[in-house]
Amino acid sequence: MTTDGVPQRTGNNLDPWYANYAERTAGLAASEVRALFAVASRPEVVSLAGGMPFVSALSHDLISSSMEKVIREQGATALQYGSGQGIPQLREQTLEVMSLEGIHGTVDNVVTATGSQQALDLVTKLFIDPGDVILAESPSYVGALGIFRSYQANVAHVATDENGLIPEALRQTIAALRAQGRRIKFLYTIPNFHNPAGVTLSAERRPEILEICRSNEILVLEDNPYGLLHFDEPAPNALRSLDPEGVIYLGTFSKTLAPGFRVGWALAPHAIREKLILAAESAILSPSSFSQMVVSEYLATADWRAQIDTFRGVYRERKEAMIEALGEHLPQLDWTNPNGGFYVWVTMPDVLDSKQMLPRAVKELVAYTPGTAFFADGRGRHAMRLSFCYPTPEAIRLGVRRLATVVNGELDLLDTFAGTGTLQLPESSGYDTAPSDLK
Ligand code: PMP
Image 1 (cartoon, protein in one colour):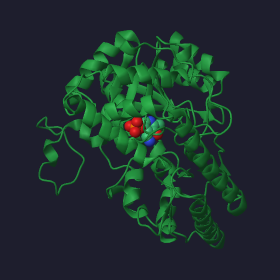
Image 2 (cartoon, protein in one colour):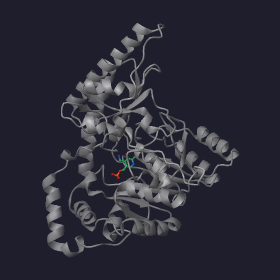
Image 3 (cartoon, protein in one colour):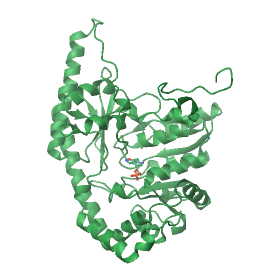
Image 4 (spheres, rainbow, N blue to C red):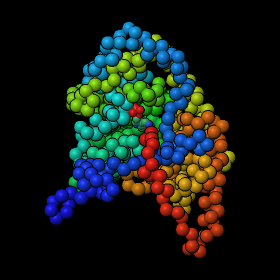
């Protein structure tokens, strides 16, 4: 606060309105992922940075005939506003999709949203007052951290290993926060094929994590965009299937069909879903009738399970290409080997800084997401997220080869200057402010 009581703003003095923005906009910084895409989208760059599903593996003819049929047969409804909760037929079909992960919900408790991203935003809006604490994995999804920041939440990261969240770490984090008198509102978790860590919460840990949250009266927000995209064994049953009253489940058609429809959903405990519907109506009146009806038509007429198998095959091949290439070209680094999803999390020696290394990587025509994007507290400098969902296996191999040139070049440089105290790494790239994407 200034002496005249006007809140001070951090921001751009060149913007004549900057003193007028709401305080919560201080959290609206461009993410590293977003920034990256500006450079990484050039065709000569192999981008291992974004999380774009490979929608070319989908029959576009099939989609266009679904669209055509919806307009021809139900155009007046499809082009009209709809219910804030979403159309009943699609909510019914959503239950069938969730039953593949052991969830048995009711149509009444499904709230359709404009992507699961919007559902995440609405849930945060419902529960978070400035200063409240959200527990999240370490690392966590960059798009969720952005939402949490915009509602002025504090994120407490909970340690995670190759089996997901560590129950003892969760217990200790809760106890430490409670001892400081902090208000913990929910645990945000991505149990399957984590973005960005690539790990899956083991079946053994699931009931324990739920019990810890239940006994501490902490709601669980389970975000599961990748659960059906397993490479070998299916993921264990969803957390929601084990505790329907303590878990809000978020699902999406973005990865099993296509993100362009922007159709996702929340399955909420009955007590919460009414507030969620009201919040959705106030935000957008209703989700797109047209999108929902096309997705519904697709689910009713296409072999959507076979399509998911096709996606799984594509992503499995790409993951294998990435893991093989890492083993061949960067054996000195550590990485996770996911059983599904889109991402590998790479950890480098402490002397390397993935954010500072990025300009050199882009110069070598390869892009990745620096690890700092996935922490609310500045950690992650020695890590990076590599995504294998979009580039072909050949491009992935080329990208990892280029990355190895950069990493080895940095290590050689550090070796050369070791002990002399003369090496100054360049300042951060400034890419943080370029426009682009947020997957
Ligand atoms: N959660 C996670 C973990 C994600 O990775 C994404 C997209 N990359 C989303 C939510 C949002 O997906 P959508 O809005 O397309 O459903």
